[in-house]
Every structure is written in structure tokens, then in C-alpha cells.
Length: 307
Image 1 (cartoon, rainbow, N blue to C red):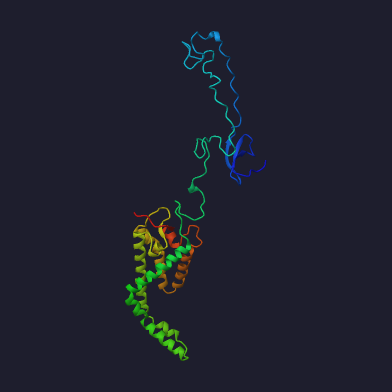
Image 2: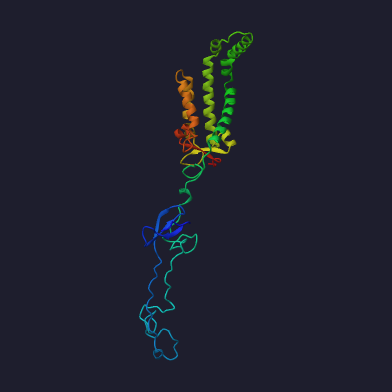
């Protein structure tokens, strides 16, 4: 049998007693019995002789004492030739045998799967909301990083100035010595940093990060950077804004990695995991970073609905 050139119902190449649907590329699993066999017409009943019709009564009228629905000269339950239904005809190849009106589902009619069951070009949540692209997330991260850095510098200015005050003086001295031909003393430059004040500033920066993320995610469903790019954060399995506990769970991994960067010997490992966390969403099929997987969240296109 020659392969069809368009989608429709055709003779099943495996069973001549049924039709099979061809979707335009391959034969599908959807079959239906053939309905092309015409039913044999019922034999006509002999006409009633004219002499048997009572005078003054129209031909074919109900006779007194006859069974309801029975006609004169006909067997009970038999139908006249004018009332006999027409035999079924074979459906066109583009139409299912049980389909009566194009586009209206009928009993036994095969319908294509709903939209939610079809693959989409853009990744989405299980309920169909499109996911934000990786570069949208990068742009939002940069904007939020700048805003959080300014806030942390304002809140922790005392510790930052104490930690880096001698460092700035030492750096200016090293630049002046380099212009006069002296070798820069990098050890003295590193020793000029007040490590205790720097750790105190790091704690302030982490606190600013947690408060910043928790406040905006629970209040608006997105941070200012994400709002600027038209994306938001939601649970993967449920739309809506995050609760305080859900927001804290999402920021838990970054906080652990920030603290790990302060601890000696763990700083390099924590930094590598942090970089991996930021890159993970670029190849993950669900577009989740590592902290999204911990928080069971997704960054999606559009703003979060009001509670």
C-alpha cells in the first residue's frame, strides 16, 4: 500500500477490516472499524389490496382494532419503504466515522491530546507557565547585586571603613613607590586589611542579602532586578508568591556558601560551588539553579499574582 501524502483516516495496512489514522508523518495507534459495508435492505412488504381498505378511509390509515403502530397489510413492527432508514455510507478519509459535525466531539471519536500534553518550544512549569531564560536571570542578578552592594555598604559602612582604611593608604604608598622604581610590597598590602572588621562587614552583607531576598520575594514575588526584567519567583508545583519559610529555604544555600567563603581552607571550595550554582540554570532542563532545587522554585516569565 502506498504511504498517504496527508493526514487522515486510511485503510489499515495491517488489517483490512479497519481504518487507521495517519498523522501526515507516521501511522498512529488510533484505529476504528470500517463502516463502508452497507446494510442489506429489508424486503418490501406486499402492498395491501385496494379491496381490503374500508370505504372512506385513506390508504395506510390506522384500522380499528389494529395494534398501535401497525399498518394495514404489514407485519407488526415492520416499516414502510418511505420510513426505512438509509443504509450507512462510508465516511470521507478526512472524517472519523462517528463524527457528525466538524470540530464537535462525538461518542467514540478520537480527539487529539489537550494543549497541556503537547511539547512546547519554551520550557515551562508543570502547569504551563513559561520559564525565564538564563540571560534574563543573569541580568536580574547583576541589578540585584549592585543594589545589595550599595545597601550593605551603607549599613556596614563603619566596619568596611575600618577594614579597608589602612589598605587604601598602603595601596597609595605602593603606587608611589612603583613610580619611583621600587618593588611593590604585596605582603604589607595584605597585612593592612583588618580581618576582624572585614568579617563583621561580611556578616552585615549576608544579613542584608537575606532580608533583601526574603522581603521582596514574599511581598512582590520578585526582587527589584527581576521586576525590572519582568520575571518572578514561584514554587515549581504551585503558582503564587512565596511564604517566609519558602523564601528562607531558597536563600539557604547561598548563605551557607557565603559563610564558607569566610572560613579559611573552605573559601576556595565554597567559591567554586557558588560559581557552579550560578551556572547550573544554563544547562538544567528545568532551568533551576542549585538554590532553586533546594527551594523547589522556578524563575518564570511574568509577575507573581496578588495573594
